[in-house]
View (spheres, rainbow, N blue to C red):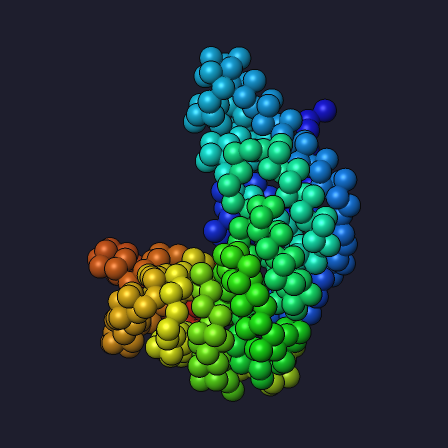
Length: 377
Ligand code: SF4
């Protein structure tokens, strides 16, 4: 029988090449109005023994892959030919582990949404076992809620860092208390700040996720300005931008249907993104736009030195004539473009323009943009 271990559904894009180890199942909170990731699923803990068993299984799979490599005459290395062989064998998890080894076997992500909820001693035991079994591992990361981090002392976080936990990803979403309350995030801006600072003072790298558009029309300025204020107070290592999409069946969709939430236009979200970046001061964070739902994926850089270039990229979009803005927005949502430069491909531009003209005639442009945007999720 093929070896297998438990895997959860989600990881951050930056962990695409990481080994995914499931420490807990689903989300401890599961109430955020915009989130559909674990809706209808109940949080549960896995025992330390179960998780160690998974690490042992992965170790065994690594040995098996190297054995296959030697048998095929590749001397234990994981090359493209071996990956193709394993892929064609149909063993998906073995292929995943082989791909991970091919990338160096250096990074691990702890699933699911809030594994820091585990006892510190248990997390330390898992980290130690992981490092002993898989010595190539250099970076271990996990999601954590700010509220959960506040239940760990700085000393506990230092203990986790020493055992090998290098980075924590926090879904901050907003720094505006009204927005946090409206979407039932379960934490305040102050708590986001305290939790973030705690992680930083333990020497653990910190990624904060911001959800552009989450304030809707009502908090169209406060969401961005207050979020910048919280980020300024934390100085996270990474600020990762995400863009709101109202997903069917979520509480946010209900609020929208009841008239309690109005979405910002694509252009207003970009203006808000500009407002937020403009208000980032005194921090040395990497701002990263690593999600295809973000309209301008080129807005990336290190603060403070790249701030003018990031604002210039946004201003370039805002200065486009209306027709070109519409062309870019439809082309982006249609996955014809990733960034503004892609519009200079004349044949792509004309193809998108033909679609824009047709949809405008039919009065369906905005609905089509929304529909296409929803398909990215
Ligand atoms: S804490 Fe994260 S995973 Fe849980 S409901 Fe909120 S956004 Fe979703």
